[in-house]
Length: 252
Image 1 (cartoon, rainbow, N blue to C red):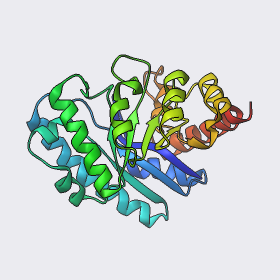
Image 2: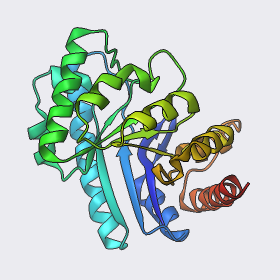
Image 3: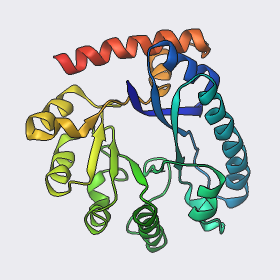
């Protein structure tokens, strides 16, 4: 199985170390994963650049470890606008690592399409993805910042760019977009069952891919506890439970 939506790094106060995350996937029979390093919001360039250096080193180490345990791992670059505003280019970033695609997270980062600078940046991202044949992952949700309809003009203009709409929580915009643009796909990570059913009944089951948002799923299983482990054993058990729930999810 290929889990198309996973992460490493820190989520809230919990740090998810790549050895433990990848071992948990392997322990549950996953042979391939597509992952991104969890990236917080920065409002200034200096701390964003410091984080970028740490993130790059850790992602390189994660990719090397994945090879050691025979797990196919595809890294995505989670785009921080502050990095690009600081003068770094996508070309230089992609030379640092063999990223398979890009992540745009409108909920955690400011990607307001009404803002000229960010709209211009989005166009540059799509131009790069088109030129270099890179996929773009979009976090989607139901808020005013991450409704995928906000970005329709880019989906339409760059029809050759494969766009992965993560979560698919609200079926109405997903179905509208899937109906118009063949370059869009989605995933099941935290996708509500009624949304998944509606998307499948609309004829788009084959465009919905298996993804878990692991280990964010682990965090939501345990966050009500004051202290909880995030080691390999805990993550392996958590992922096993996620697979059981997923089977029920698609079978019902």
